[in-house]
Image (cartoon, rainbow, N blue to C red; front, top):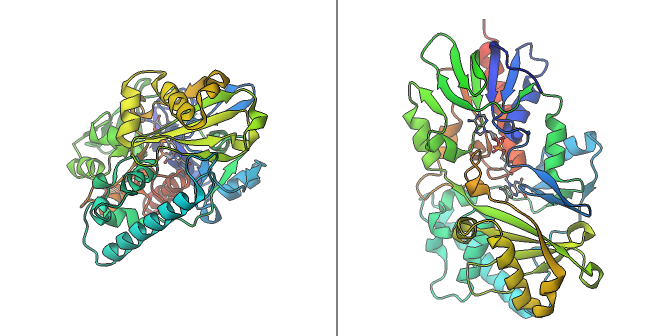
Amino acid sequence: MTSLPSSVDVAIIGAGAAGLGAAHALHGSGLSVIVLEARDRLGGRAWTVQASPEVTFDVGCGWLHSANKNSFVPIARQLNFEINTDLPPWGDRAFGDVFPEAERKDFVLALDAFYERVWEAAEKGTDAPAADYLEPGNRWNPMIDAVSTYVNGCELDQVSLLDFEAYEDTYFNWRVRAGYGTLIAAYGAPCPIALNCNVTLVDHSGKRIRLETSQGSLEAGAAIVTLPTDLIADEAIRFSPALPAKLDAARGLPLGVDDKVTLALEGAEAFPKEGNLRGATMRTAMGTYHIRPFGQPCIEGFFGGSFARELEDAGVGAMAAQSIDEIAGLLGNDIRRKLKPLYESRWAHDPFARGSYSHALPGHAGDRALLAAPVDGRMFFAGEATSPNFFTTAHGARDSGERAAREVVAILSKP
Ligand SMILES: Cc1cc2nc3c(=O)[nH]c(=O)nc-3n(C[C@H](O)[C@H](O)[C@H](O)COP(=O)(O)OP(=O)(O)OC[C@H]3O[C@@H](n4cnc5c(N)ncnc54)[C@H](O)[C@@H]3O)c2cc1C
């Protein structure tokens, strides 16, 4: 950990994937840099924990989405992290009889037809809630909406059609055996970072930017802000003079909620490795389960949207209890005594995240570019929400940090 300097060329606010991407890109530029991080760890929404001696658990990001275009893949290789390319559990696999193959195929057809309608509508260029393109009365609508809660963190009525279509999915989804959070922490380790350093004010009224933090104040020639959108929108960090256009853009890109839980599984050998369990197919408020990720003796649950928010609000343990009830409903009551809660996330209640990842509200697809735009040639913005095509992801966040660093270098290196 680096102590707080009194003056730097560039202050980066936040040591998540975006802030670390910016710090790496500024290395060797000749500019002095400090990353200011409120937490006592780096990684932000990327965080791996050892949930038990046998279970490594990514509390936040876990998948190297669009892996063939994901900038963390070459970084993982360079840092000697083992990459796992097994197929993800979603898609066409399911464990047990609760969601038979014929039903799954029917669902996938309905989902594909929905995506096709969204694509055609987006081609016309007018925004609308993505929910408008659900086929009225289709039996699979609640489950299509559940998929939206997993990928967008919210239901389709809150999702901009144009933003949804702008996301680039190459359908390669890989993983890091040691955890995505572990990889990102290792990537950030060489960077100059002040931990436990909560930035409360960015005063850009003077010649140099003054930042007030929980560890005192410092001056900087430029600042790169990488905070999650809800923290900007709620003014958890204050700009002086105020930046109303940034607040508006952040409000157009609220964070949805996605949460994960891991349960220890006794007698795991009787269950398939990398299995998928999804049973309550006719409603949106349901979990989806990953059986024995990497062959570990556990089941991971994933919840999204308003259901995830409700479970968080119900208190610690509610998500694990819901998972056990739901799994017992699918596989029989005997499994209850084999499952033991190990760890669950609470991203909406996390004071330095306040949610999981951003989605553009209908009519706000353009807000990603507005949030990303520099101010006065000395305040720069990065973070997953500013990524044009890889928003919601860790690699999109990292790339956005690199983009902001290039903007800084282009401006600060001008005579
Ligand atoms: C449950 C879940 C599952 C996910 N799954 C995936 C996945 O499979 N694949 C994928 O690619 N992505 C996934 N994501 C998304 C991914 O984790 C994020 O998009 C990415 O990590 C965001 O990086 P960031 O740098 O933009 O923001 P953050 O990681 O949030 O970094 C911002 C940093 O700023 C710090 N901060 C906040 N306020 C202050 C302050 N006032 N002063 C100083 N520091 C401050 C925070 O502590 C944080 O460290 C998932 C996220 C969640 C929550």
